Image (cartoon, rainbow, N blue to C red; front, side):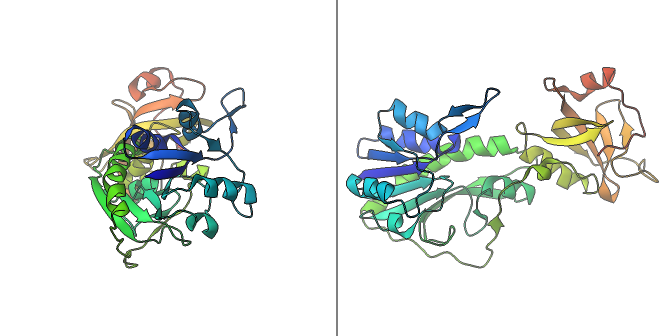
Length: 314
């Protein structure tokens, strides 16, 4: 099976490595997004997928756009690929690209479609309080994640699951499911159309979603913290400075201590940073990262912090 692989972030690397290691699959080319500035020195850095492909000696292109790009399309046609496998590529694929392969354009998508079509399915499933997510192998078409499904696998989301944990679980799950499914598609497996009922859209994340709104109930705040943990981290203002909240827990028994307390008010500093939330709940911050410092346990931070009971966060 001749495969062109289109992907960009580290999430996609396990799929590429799995294809490279399979004796019946030949990755004949990789397309990834252009090098971007990153790090303290803001140096141009290749995407994780580009780096992995170059290390493996695979031909790589990094066009700024695929639309109306005759050179990129000619490159794809020269590869005479059976499959175009896309995993978090981050660009819209024109119809000419979808039609250029002999068997099928395939997408590895990190949700249980049709729920969470779009750019940020992992994070949206956590923020929404879903009890499960998973990976789907789907047929690509011009619509956004609207194509038929070849295979799916589910993964439970618990009340302690973090975004990082989902990322590290779903990436190898997608690679394994891809290897199992491609030979079946090669041998004629048909996709099943998606049921439009239950469709949701996973819009792109924005930085302001990391800022904790203490008017939300404690469970919703906990989901925000877990979604962005450990990086880039949820955050809140305390005495004019940003605090990155790495971990915490919902306190289910606050014994009426929040009567006449404001949302965001520090209630206690004994076992962590206990903060009043919307609906009369309390959220305990247990791990924190002050500006310019390393992450630490909240109890250690509080020993030297200029905070006191009654201060309002946010």
